Amino acid sequence: MSESRFDVIIQGAGMNGLVLARALALQGWRIAVLDTQPVQRWTEADGGLRVIAVTVASERILQRLGVWQDMRRISPFRAIQAWDGVAGGCVRFESAQIDEPHLGHIIENRLIQTVLFDRLQQDDNVSFLIPAAVAAIEADDERARVTLRDGRRLQAKLVVGADGVNSPIRKLCRIPVDGYDYRQSGLVATITTELPHGEVARQRFLPDGPLAFLPLSDGRCSIVWSQPTAEAERRLALDEAAFCAELTEASAEMLGQVTGCGPRGAFPLRSQQARSYIAPRVALIGDAAHVIHPLAGQGANLGFLDAAVLAEEVERAGKAARDIGGEAVLRRFQRRRRGDNVLMQATMDGFHYLFGSGAPWLALPRSAGLNIVDRLPPLKAFFMRRAMGLVPDLPQLAR
Image (cartoon, rainbow, N blue to C red; front, side, top):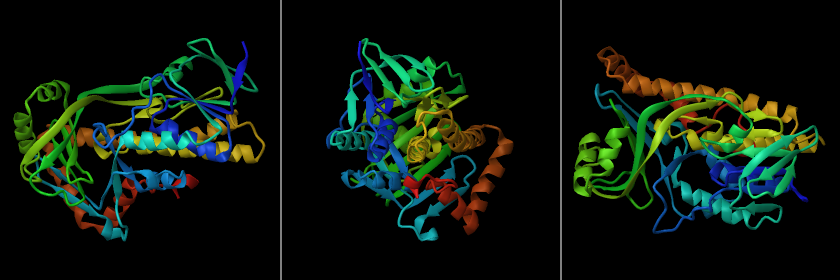
């Protein structure tokens, strides 16, 4: 059976896989994008339940990929307010304090995916094989040979797993993971509130987990409510009025009464880190490589940076006429991304423990910590720039 030849094969047509595909397509490489499921398209009526807080670094990436202007429904947030729901400490970050127009944007996941997918349809050097899935990978000094579940055979210099938390590519490469289940779920919904959100992202830390109100462009809010899985299941079963009443109470009426709620959903929360992001001619990005708690909304943004760094290392190798799937390229990618991702994971786990612990001796210092940060402009500026994704060693696409 003949083999179809590509430069890069990407398993996973989610946001991270499509960001990488577009970045590589602009460099002129021949790309194959595979997924087991059709891309779920965004519509005005059904944007999906999941949103992300797109950082300034991710915004720059999407701008340079030529898709930012096609995001039809986005909401900037110009402030972040967080407070301890037990001890009462509070901190407020405002973009004006660091002379920035905004701290980020709230955008529906499905909208980003749809815009990227539609743009890639116009790239002659990108082929979509959907539905399709990699069943086997054989790598040698020159290429990777890939066999699909339906028997088709492909070959490429590099194979990328952008295929999620249970990544089949990672499993095929026998890369172990370290992690644990939080025994929590993130309950998501779009809600209507009595008071306007004022383009402020709000988060209240509760003993069972943080509750975030994220501003949407139509005046509503998207919520992410981390809580024990049993509680999430109970709240999913409530009628709308009962759910709105519980949400109003949990939010301490930070936007007055919750007056309406659309469809609800929940997803399991876990912390996970692949012991390696690479194998012979294989790289992992996004949730295939790392999963963190959503309390700071950084998960998808880390995946965008993975994609941008990998694309940068591929471009560097191509310009030097080196093997784009060679060990040197993969090791540089891993060295640039794994340390930052592990640090972010540890930070989120620390916040989860600090604010989720019922230990009374932690309540006072954590509340005092929020208040101290709120009163120290240089420290606030540091945290804001980190939240905006403006970290050291940014790839060119994010500068």
